[in-house]
Image 1 (cartoon, rainbow, N blue to C red):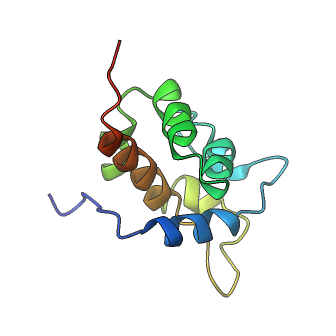
Image 2 (tube, rainbow, N blue to C red):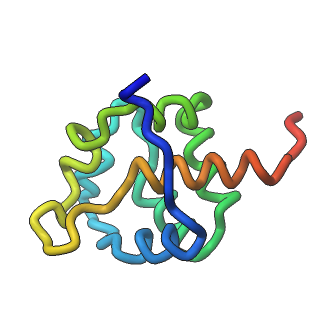
Length: 113
């Protein structure tokens, strides 16, 4: 269970982290995602506080996005491709943002059809 990551991002922290994203045209983070989640778009949703939209994007691309996000080696995949990897603040915490979005959605108690 050591591989399972938990988020420590608050709403304010998640929005701040999402707003750091450069929204790169070529989205190298997305190229590193084995499930092809639209990372740039779900981060954009979080930056505008559309947490439902972020979770919808994640679950549309990967129905088990919550579980995958918890165990995915993001440092080797999406985060490793982030253009901010060499910056002082470091790369975007994509795994933390994914976990934040899916956990926030879970707390919404949206009825599934």
